[in-house]
Image 1 (cartoon, rainbow, N blue to C red):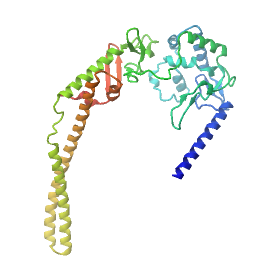
Image 2: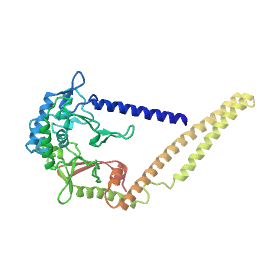
Image 3: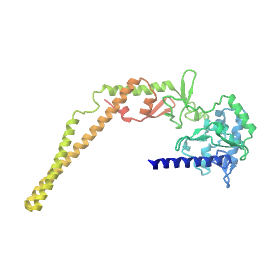
Length: 386
């Protein structure tokens, strides 16, 4: 116990020293992330240098913002100019683009990527560190209060002037570009509904009558199959629950989803075969002892042993068959019980909610023409037949 306390105290002390050292490097402007923000690259001395090609794109984005262009308008402008996305640009330089699937990009910037560029104060040459903090080792980083950030003006070459940056922030504020919400919106299909054409998550928006999902990603490309793709949230939730509810009624209406009446008897038979096999093995051992002690001759020993081996082989074959059949029946019973439990919960809940979605749905793919494909988590629930 004392050792654990000492180890914990040492680890905590070491962690504090590491944090203090990192903080000191931040305050001196020496601490840098491994990856540079779009528009910059690392020089030979480790300092930030302007990436001329990417920097021109950053300047273009700010100039369009100064013209009061919305993020969607800027996305369209970049697409028309065939400006590669940050991920595509990094890949063209031989750099890793992270886990993002570049095959879906098609030179279409996301609206969020535009907003990230427009809110990035480091483009003014200001060094910023300590924006995120972790409360515990291995925990996720959280946005820290801005008063805790380390800022050093004129730390590296600027791509955008401070005046331009401030003007854009004013325009963004007037246009209603709100900062990121600290508590994400919760809804039943959150993180589950995607465009079947381009594979991107559908954007949820609150309409005048009811919320809807649309493929924001392809709004900039009129020729895209999913351009203007939109589905009403209430309608798709009703559709999904209808599918789930009908299947639940089928399952509940079946007296038994598997013939389990013989399972107890067959389990007893399995136990009896196990006992008989053990008896045969003991009989073989006893027979061998008699042979060694000279109680029986060699010919008699071989004859009785052959008979026991024949019976033992037959018992083993029957036992393995019964065991496999019982395992199959037990697995079916477990699966049936699980399906029935889900079916009963569907009836009790009465509508599609987050609990049901997390339990049953892996992904919902929406296509033009109101076609919907569902990737189910519990496949045997929706495939169960009478």
